[in-house]
Image 1: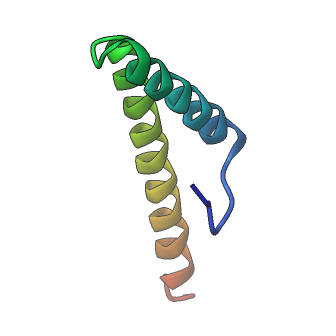
Image 2: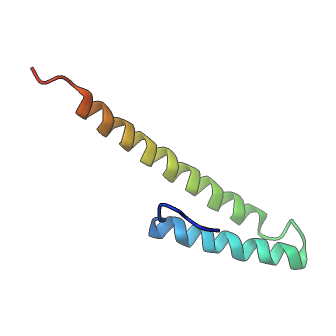
Image 3: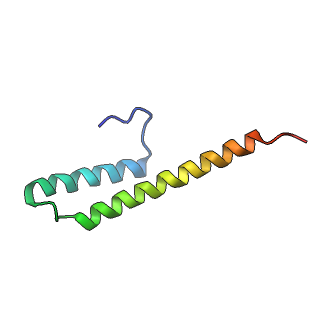
Length: 67
């Protein structure tokens, strides 16, 4: 997978771990590492939500009229 805009170090670590789990699942079945994969996906979604909130807050701050 190509990350056109780059990837944060924590996200890259989660991505690599997720790929390792997927490889194990191919060999041993889909139940292997299921809870770990869920934790990785949940952590990445949380990071995305946090980054989105930060972005929206910065955008709102710059849009405020100067009094």
